[in-house]
Length: 90
Image 1 (cartoon, rainbow, N blue to C red):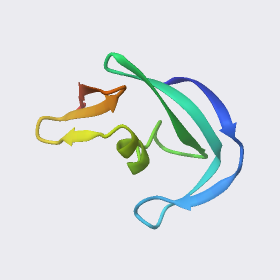
Image 2 (cartoon, one colour; image 1 turned 135 degrees about the vertical axis):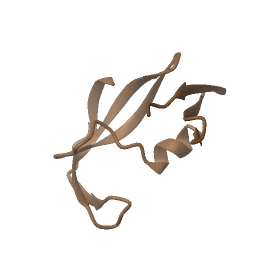
Image 3 (cartoon, rainbow, N blue to C red; image 1 turned 60 degrees about the horizontal axis):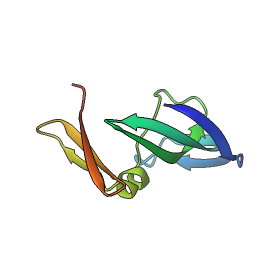
Image 4 (cartoon, helix red, strand yellow; image 1 turned 45 degrees about the horizontal axis):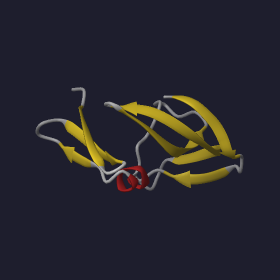
């Protein structure tokens, strides 16, 4: 991921989907990410002290009409009317 810029600097707090772990956001950014042959853009919250680079949430999965094939380990996203798939790491 690269080329991000803040689109909102409002500090906010919320809880992970587990309903327990609190997160604090410094605002949101627009990110671009290479997904297969497509460059996709999306908005993401900037989280203080997040232990991973990115958490993909339901809003992202819905926007890109995602399909996850757990058995075959593929993730596919729909962009500009085309579906692109990538193999997930073990």
